Amino acid sequence: MSSLTTATRPAISIIIPTLDEAHSLGATLQALTRLGHGVRVEVVVVDGGSADATREIARDHGAHIILAARGRGAQMHAGASVARGDVLWFLHADTTPPPGAPGRILDALRRDPKIVGGNFAVSFDGTRLAARFLTWLYPQLRKLGLCYGDSAIFVRASVYKQVGGFKPFPIFEDLDLVRRLKRRGELVHLRAQVVTSSRRFEGRSFAFTFARWSFLQMLYWLGVNPYTLSRLYAPIRRRGGARAG
Image 1 (cartoon, rainbow, N blue to C red):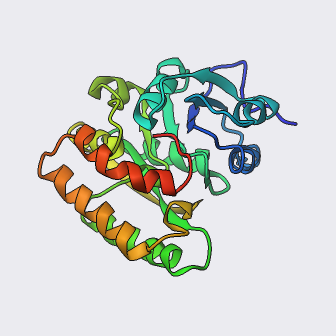
Image 2: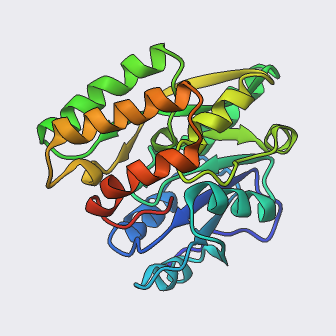
């Protein structure tokens, strides 16, 4: 099995937060071994206390594994603190990147020093209405300036440190980081698609789940504390299966 770490300084550090992700992590890590373009990368898997084979799978694929307090924001920040790359790329454990993604990231950042980071287009897997609707919805939300962790956010490591990185928020840590990054420079959107799971919306009323998600987001933009919002979000997260954050 090819290793996902490099002894020399990597150009990109790929940071993956995990919590009981044995069912999806292997496919994601395998996809990372096929990215190509000769870009040096390292993969840092930040585990929040998995009770399944998540860490064993990460180890078998040669990823660098660290443990951190549970919570997607806290885990990604812990990963960023040990990352050696000039660029930090935050990838969810159930998200498959497109071929050549590291090269696309570096090309985008080299084009203009004002660009501090960016993200990818998103396709949700599956043929259900929820997956098709979300795949359509994300480009519309992007027009409003919204950028979510599902879209595989990347950022210059130097800028990440300048803005203070991810906060240990239990929810909307991605929106919070993006808002601070935009104060430092421009974010670029890459047309290449990452494919992510729609599992959190499966096995339940999609209309109800989406309505609650939209309501929580409205409260966030009105200034409600993310810790308060997480208590409302918890029932959605539990029904959707274990996820970091």
